[in-house]
Image 1 (cartoon, rainbow, N blue to C red):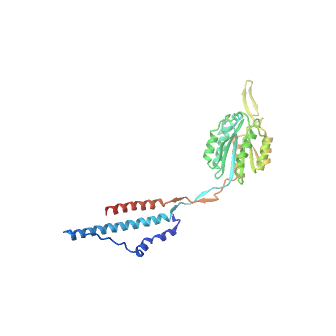
Image 2: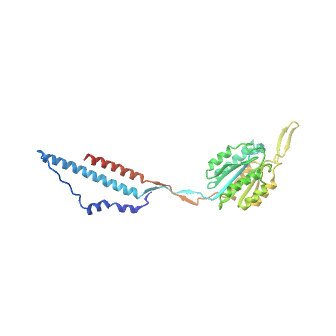
Image 3: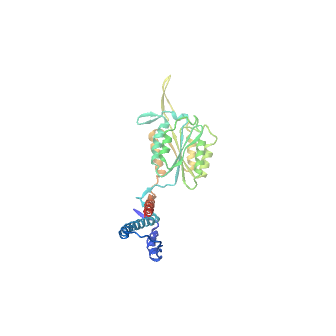
Amino acid sequence: MTRFVWLWAFAALPLPLIFYLLLPRAQSSTGKALKIPFFNELSDFCETSTRKNAKGAKILALAAWILLVGAAARPQWIGAPLDIPVSGRDLLLAVDISGSMKARDMEIEGEAVDRLTAIKKVAGEFITRREGDRIGLILFGSRAYLQAPLSLDRKTVNQLLQESMIGIAGKKTAIGDALGLAVKRLHERPGQRKVLILLTDGANTSGTIDPIKAAELAKTDKVSIYTIGIGAERMVVNSFFGNRVVNPSADLDEKSLKEIALLTGGRYFRARESADLEKIYALLDQLEPVAGHDDSLRPIHELFPWPLGCALALSFLLIVIKRRN
């Protein structure tokens, strides 16, 4: 639909007529005359041509004035309403990319994959579903790095997750530093619903911040932390002495992860296989619901440049006609 923002501007339409009726006529100056033998014929031709030009000029001037007033009324085209999902939630993912994440104890469609690959698949689908949330990504190994700041651009955050590589942040695990960095970033957005999802397969073996101290800071800042311990508990490996069964998650510090979640009002989850990860993220969708369409937006396009441009073009045409006369 089309609307005029300043409809009152159309009150200026009759102004030229008012001035024409109220203001006195301009006096034409008379000068010395020159006798011309064929004056009558020339006079008839000039009067006819002048009348035509004057009539055309008046029509152009009237059209230019109407277009100018129409532009001043600020016409707009308003599109169909678009639903805007709004949740007010800030959600950070902290993903462990230390050396231990290369353990191939997870499966996707019957094929053995490393832990980070399983996280990429399941967490990537989770990110895609989080419409309306501002999502950020932290990657940590021996150090923690903010890979993607909080943003509504879920596609870019997911892409950065898919491009992450094991070991690029160091081989050790700095859980405390990752929590501290997350709290620092979320602290900059007071009054929002702040959530951190931490995925790791080990214990805090690096960094300068104690994970429990970082969790206490998160509690003070009202940040809910959901911790996920990833890794199978039974894995068959080949050795010189034949096949043997090992526990690839022996280094997982479940006690600390549970305490971190408990302190901040979150929950601890254990993912022993890819199916567990999918169930956990489905449960997180229930615990932290995806936003509904709480608001709507109608796109607005300004149309005034079109009548304004036409009025200017007609004004230049009037100048040309006047000069020719």
